[in-house]
Length: 118
Image 1 (spheres, rainbow, N blue to C red):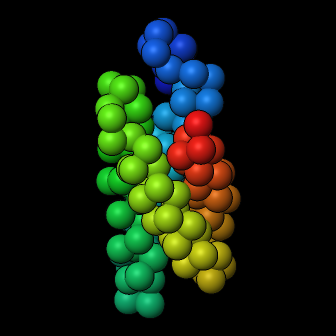
Image 2: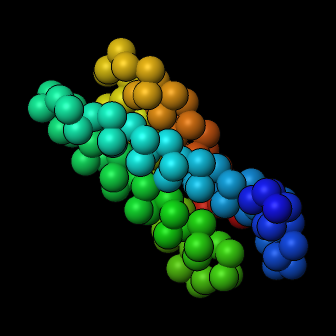
């Protein structure tokens, strides 16, 4: 079963929340990949650190939404902020993994900001 199929079965989630869970999960995964790729270069230390932050915060935010936590809105703000900062850092590097990561993180930040206003 895909993540989209699974989230569609959670009764309390709106369509926007389902999409946010999916993009947060994707952001977490792409950041793990990017961070791993960045380990070989000292000049990528900030990118690696921010990617690890996003991976942790985005996966936590997805879990908070899935369980209808009262703290999901506050975490959405944190997640959006760290995604935006990491996307800016990734955009500074020419590596494919950084560019892919930046694209996903922009979408994740937008989705999280939508959750804050919902």
